[in-house]
Image (cartoon, rainbow over all chains, first blue to last red; front, side, top):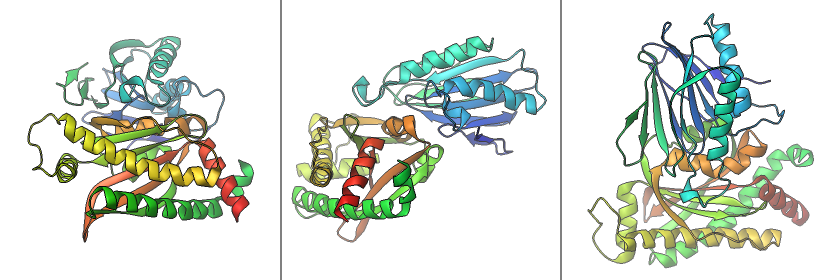
Length: 163
Length: 205
């Protein structure tokens, strides 16, 4: 299975579609989301986070970047944390995205299915969801702060929300 | 699809030829619509990795004004016309023969001017593809959207993402007399449309 994982010392890490990126305080991770889901796992003791930009709910056994699919992204995020010597217990998850863009009448409205698949994958991995901002019909800019574990969600034209 | 992959460079070249011809039609339509003010040129037809789509299109986290036209079905795709606030308002104003709007909310007339522009451009491309593949394509009414450009592009590429980690994009640029405008059109055909176009181009070669 190919991986599409980045871990750089940059202060801000942009997480593109299908990518997984890990970071430590004081790094921040950013993703722009439509129907995709930004899912961040955080270990408060280590001030380490990892974010996946999930595009589709199910890999159906396909090869490809594991961060692209909900069912492969969460296990891959845990594998990356283990590789870095991080404990995978005590993690919490925050997630945002899953909009049905184009007022819900455009092509392939997959936001709800993505949100449900990510929630199921987290449940299967035994990870508690500490905050979420899902659905709607607008895009989101998401910033995850590895120092505080806070996820700031900015919908177009609306006040920012902190999870 | 394997056969088509073997002829990958040929296919991209052939699609470039198709879109050059379609862009010529789109430019003529745009020129008529804007009273000779605006012309359209084909920038590139290329295949890129899914995760790089926003970077490749140079779409960051800025809010953009967009008109989206969707062709439904397996042989379908999405066409997105992207503007920044200033350029979108200038186009609407020039079409309406008025000064650019200054209210934060766009008026219905301004939105209508932009959606009609998307309709004219989209129909020029759709007509060219229809002539090639011999299949009637049914575009949606254009949607007017103000949102993060990357969020909208993400939705537009979703159908391609179902079957591939790579995307085919056709990018178009605009000129006002000698000035390059910061407007963009992105056309994202589905896998089914790519295959239909490539089969037709192959048969015609």
